[in-house]
Structures are given as structure tokens and as C-alpha cells.
Image (cartoon, rainbow, N blue to C red; front, side):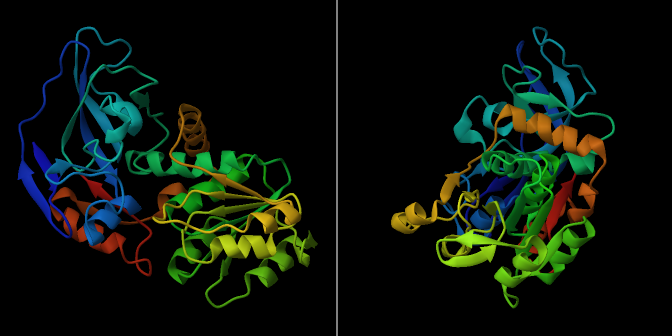
Length: 336
């Protein structure tokens, strides 16, 4: 089978490995599409330990949609030909393998496979290309859920990448009346605008002014501010937490989903006086998969439109390079 092995910074070995064989309790799937995650970009551009835990010489990739090609005799409710989403935390039987499921290899062995646990059925209405985004959308959906949104609330999302867009869509799905997405990339913001969201290039525009014009005003510990209930950091850029501490109104909350290495100082006293809340969100849970499948199946948002480039498997290194360019790419997928 075709396989991509991670060999370090800007070094991917495109090779052939033996095709796996399913045991009595296992299945083997053939990947149809794989999406490139920001963590894949990080380890490619900067080396090990900068994204997911990926060891040298290992298969990698974890955002994929697949078709079942082998089924062990003890496996129930999974059939050859089924389209499935392999759930990265459990697909290899070890949550530490979540980033190395084998999305960039042609075939993947899934041990002890159970429907609704290691794999989820992909509804017919969802295209295979769109389904390659299920994994990052579950991350964004979890972040939105962790903000405990209420109907009619207003939200600001930092970051117009796949996870930021997923969070914005999920916030609408959960009942938020208005969502503002901010980023420094006009290319990505235009994609967001086409999905129906308000946008702000906070690299050159005043976020406070944009948000006040859209949401109106409310009170914070510092005085008048924008009337936003929820902030989500899906960018991880320096200064976002400080922006929330400055702008956050009383009883607002911020969810951090972006992965950023290193310690980040927090002014707890300012949070206390401002009645602000800081919430972490990492990964996803099974209910997030169900929410994302419902979101995609609804057809309410043109989710496939955020896929800006598609490459054949043989051009994986070039695809990851393209995914690194925020001014020309949003989501990049691999086709098998």
C-alpha cells in the first residue's frame, strides 16, 4: 500500500508498506480523502514535538474519511463498502495515537472495531470530500459547546482556519444570533464572509469598533465595551488573551482551543474583578461527532467551500507546503 512516513522537518518518505489484514475483531479501511491539520503543518515545518506526538519513521495524518474493505468475522454492524469516519482517539486502540492514525496512508487497520466507537457511519448526504473535515469540525464543535452557548447570545471567534470556522458554525447551530470571525488573512475572511458570517481583519481594523457596531455595547470592569457573550481563541496568536481581558464584558467567557506551546501569564485579579471566565477545550467527545454529522447533513452551510485545494496522494509534501500559506489556502485535502 501507499504510505507516508514522517522523517522530521520537511522530510516525508513516500513509500510502499504491506497492506494490513483484519483479524477476527478488526476492520481494514481504505482512505478516500484526508485533510491536512495545522498540527501536520507544524511538525512538517518545524520538526517533532511542535504539533501532535508523531515519532520519526511513523505513519501520520488523522483527518480522514474511509471505506471499509475488510471485516473480521466477529465484527457487528460494519460491512464492506461502508463509508466511515475513523475516530482518532480510539481508531488505533490508544489515545496517544490520535495524531498517527494513518490518514496519509492508503489503508488503515482498526483493531477491535465497533460502530459508534472506533468508527462512525457517514450519512449518504455528506460527500466524501466534506466528510474529510469531520475531525477538525469536532474540535471546533467541542470548543463551541464548552462556551455553554445560550440562544440569542453573541460571539467572537479568533482565527478563520478550519477549526475557527467550525466553531463559528457550531455556535450558530447551538443558537447564537450573531458571530463575528476575525483574522489577519483577507483570503480566509472572504471565505468566512461567503458562509454568512460577519468578519473583521483585526490586523488593521479595531476589533472593539467592529464588535460594537455589530453587537452594541455593554459594561466591563474597564467601562463600556462590546456586547459579546462568548470569545473563542482558535488562532493561538500572542495578545488574544489580553484582548479578552480588556474587552470582555461582565459575565462573558473565553474558550481557548488553539494549541500554543509554552506558559501564558494570566491576570487572575483582572478576571476576578471583571467577572470573566477562561475555559480550555481540547480534542472532542462522541457527542461532538454526532453534532458535526447533523450540521453537515443539514446542508445549511456550504462547508465544502472552505476546501481551497485538492492534491493527489503523491503530492502530499507540496500539499502541506500549500496548507502553510494562509494567504492562498484555507483547508487542503489529499485525494486517494
